[in-house]
Image: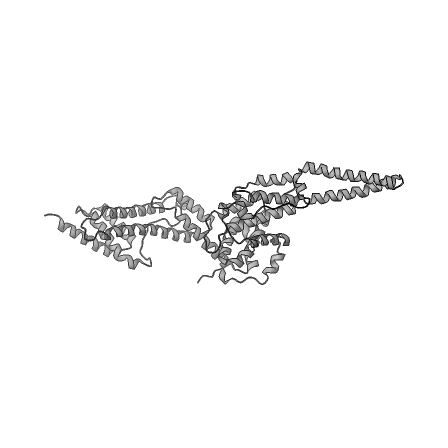
Length: 451
């Protein structure tokens, strides 16, 4: 029996390690991100959500922040110089007036008020990164589709306020936006991933300009939240996060250390989510197999880090399901015409579709460049399936019906034998069983041919 994350117990050191680990955000940033995530009682898929749904509403400025917002960097610098100069002039005047005309008193007054003015200008300047952070938040939250955000837009906002993207307040907002985005992308509860999550997160991370370590910190913040909310969602976070960071995930995503889970449990999270997404991709494979699609499926499998053996089993199961759909359709038509001596054309068409599909799988399974294709190509056989014994009676009926149509002219040539042999293998019938059916059909056909 496989162990899921339900059996995992949080490490007793997780809480203290979370605060002390260099791979986790600063306490302030962590509290802000956690509070924001905890305050939202809903989820949404970011690719289909507006900015405010993901990041919350607009933030308002207060105190001197609106003044800072209104001034471009050049004007703000000029104003700061003007304030200091005016203060120094006023100080010089006061020192002259009340210092008995002493030059020393005048200079001292200028120095005191000049310093006060400089301190005030510095105080105003210190809120610039905070104002820039609010501007960034409002810009991203105001977008109809946050996944379309570009790095140039973020750089332009920083440039507008004359700040660096590495300023603490601005960078903290970048991290908060990233955390909110990733949180919105992970489906809640038992909902499956859609397959676009990794690409969307990587694109958004690049647009924000976050490095891997800062971004990984936010994944751990989200992990602590999801670990309490839903272990299913937590498993999906592990899968998506490991794909986002690739080989580096082993070093910057401390799942085992913070959450007390094992390598085996991480492997389960990776495998089950990869299987779920791979099953979605396999739906693009129909009976008319396209080589380009087979190559794309292989790329997807490698991107999801799904083992070849599992991918092959899933492909074969998908192929069987397609064939069983044709079988069910043929049997339904056949049974709706009981007692009819003529086999309906639709039944023959369904069986011919099965044979053509199986032939394509067989040829592609031997293709020279087959290593580029989806795993699992090759002839299909229903033999050994858990419900084969239950189906075998119906399979014999359909086999006999097809043999009747093929042998209706009374001739059994090599081409017909090859088709009947291939169909026998697909249906998982024994050689003697199939030969007995063919002999019975041939005898019936011969008896109906006028002497």
